[in-house]
Length: 307
Image 1 (cartoon, helix red, strand yellow):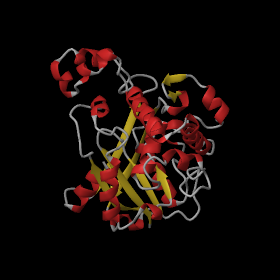
Image 2 (tube, rainbow, N blue to C red; image 1 turned 30 degrees about the vertical axis):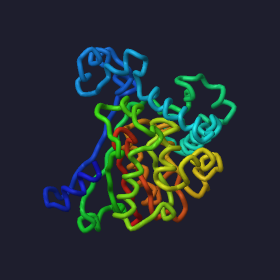
Image 3 (cartoon, rainbow, N blue to C red; image 1 turned 135 degrees about the horizontal axis):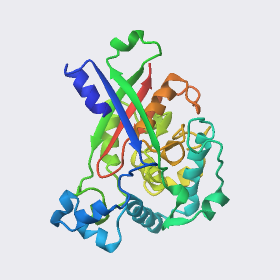
Image 4 (cartoon, rainbow, N blue to C red; image 1 turned 135 degrees about the vertical axis):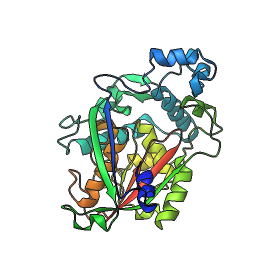
């Protein structure tokens, strides 16, 4: 959405664009929860474009199950551990405990509690899953010139990119498990384009808001966006690098795992707060912020910069 707003402004089709997302996933309908409608789609050839009929009858029904297969493969190939996934959930909860607006504010999480939580889809436990949320948030995008006299300091959009993996499959989500390497995200191609457009590299990112539908999605993005080598996402997270005071603090409002799930829009809002210097989890002297969008089936990201 940020990229489309930038394109509209630069092409003269708009001067100011309002971006928003609202969800009532907690009180009413949760996208991707394995519904009767999805089962009906599976009875149709092509699954109404989803190819669900090849997956739902065999038990693959939700996004959480898809990412659990990816997590299991990463564990087999690289020795990733449950404790390393737990360190991601704990890092996000730590940030949420400083955010009064977070769903999990004042609800600490430690490793013992994480490991004792019920298994949802092996190897992902309860706290590896994003929250169910009712909420909404928005940002306004305009030119730097028009924003120069706003009440609060504007935040600059340094670069935006979107991309797909080289072996893109049809359908919605489940066909990802048929790819040659299911632990490679579209984020690899997104990162290459994004950093080239920004004239920056991963070592110049001060803080990151990574789309955390599940803890494993953060681990995979740490690798894809170049913060560590392939297969080293687990040790990198476990080292404390992603926590408050680490070399790459992530999801400083709590993220989807502990703040709320508003389809990534709350990550954009938190990125803006970081660059303005008024986040509840403010990173001292932060001047650049990476914000990533949904990891599958395509991916997207934006780099924000302090003005």
